[in-house]
Length: 205
Picture 1 (tube, rainbow, N blue to C red):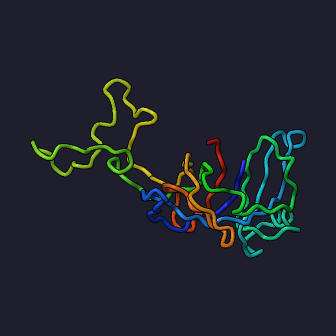
Picture 2 (picture 1 turned 90 degrees about the horizontal axis):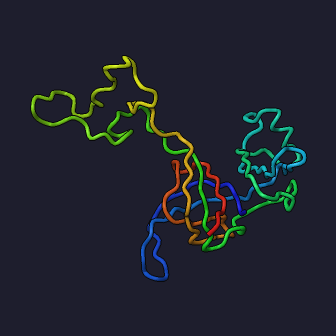
Picture 3 (picture 1 turned 60 degrees about the vertical axis):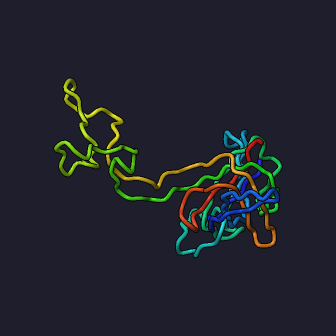
């Protein structure tokens, strides 16, 4: 499995050799340094831990500084589970050149936070009727209880905080790779605001 960390840059229309325009997102990726290799014998599962970016020492805990002291001070540390992590070793570097045009990837990150939202925006409710005596209730949820149990059912769709969730977008295709500048172009949209941290990993075609 191929993997890397990166940041979301921008979206635009990409016109391929066939003349068709598709939505695409530009990602600034890597290089990432492998900070730890986990094995089934020692840790119970196979995984690779990687560090990305840079951060001032004052903003990193002493425990993390001690963990990565010989590699640097990273802005983010993430872990990728693998079937076999024995091919990697601590200190290895992974960059944009790992990916190729045509690779199918899954991009994971934190979605945009939208604050407290009502049921129309949060759950797609249609709202109340516009005529026949309604007043000030076009975007209200309507009845939220029942006559029998005298309580609100668990899981009832109501207004509340929306966004800031971990989201994974699958089936994105790599359209271009720029190893010189560390850029990857993928189809479709990815979660988060511009500059958001993203996890990119390959999936079976």
